[in-house]
Image (cartoon, rainbow over all chains, first blue to last red; front, side):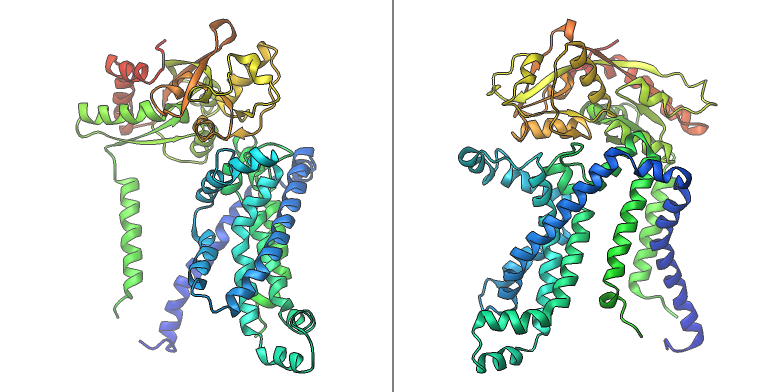
Length: 263
Length: 248
């Protein structure tokens, strides 16, 4: 079979068209049923603004936590020689493929009031994570950390170590080398990783509702608000979904250089 | 030209799954509220044993989820709901001949961890600041019943989370994440050793009436009626009472 033959090429267009339709039709459905004339009213309610504020705060918290915890991890993964690297990388990728609700249950068993870590945390510090805003951030960090780590690690691997060696030979210490040479060169990967982690955290649902619960103003993020609205006011759910689509599309637009290379 | 193997596999899968969905004309699709999951599981199996050739496919979830699925076109032959309101919201203007029948009664109870370690004795304890209490969301029948009985008893409860179904709420009490939750008495019968019930006295309690309706039309209607007849029969009633429901 020769893919360059016109008949074969046109045959290829069938699965291409199906794939595009599969991806686009749900969005078309959303747009077709959107309550356009009442959209502003639907989105201007206090509950929506609460959910939006909570979503933005918790996603930003999760992205920052991913940066603080994920950058050292990415460095270790890209440079270390430890035999544990494979195991750790598996752990890093696992949240990407596990159903988030499984993550929520696992988080409860670990950080819940009766959990392995959660029980001593509450006894000693009086700290309780489930059903709290901190719980939302924890759940969101669990699902979004992999996106940051993988992106940062890819950037670090593409970084030519001879630049760092040159800086060191000119007398720069390891920290100065990292700050003035490595960091600026891997900055695009870190930016992309941060945005991806942020977007993933924004869309988080399963782990959040399982671990952090669903309480307006405290743990009800935009995706949970969509789920809750679906039960009472489907029209509001559609409006909220559009808002999420718009925010996600904006993030992808900011990432366009990375994902949609010209030519 | 031979098709590539993955494509053949995909086409076979699609064909097989579609065939299951449409040609399975001996099946009855039963939607049941989350609190009915355990007895309906047993009812479906008992029905299939009693009437060979019939197959029941059960879909249990929080009632609002079921209503949404049905409204968006999911096939449903029999709908058993934890409240009349949800069922009525499904019926269109042309459905006056559909006549829901009450088949079970339920009461509310306070779910606590086994052994009642926090010493919860009644509704008024749920106001305590040292307790983490949750209800089902206001759109879920159990959440609606809970709110109405709390209001009638003038008890102020700060719900830590609006849970999507009674099953989710019971699980969180069983896991020890919540100290108490208002659920159906039937949710706490013979299911999970990690939870137990604190009963709410009758004057403070509400009675939840569970209606069932046949939504199937045409040739599926007869099969759906056979299942509902079984549900309303003595054998069906015995299964319901064994799971903590009362009969109307």
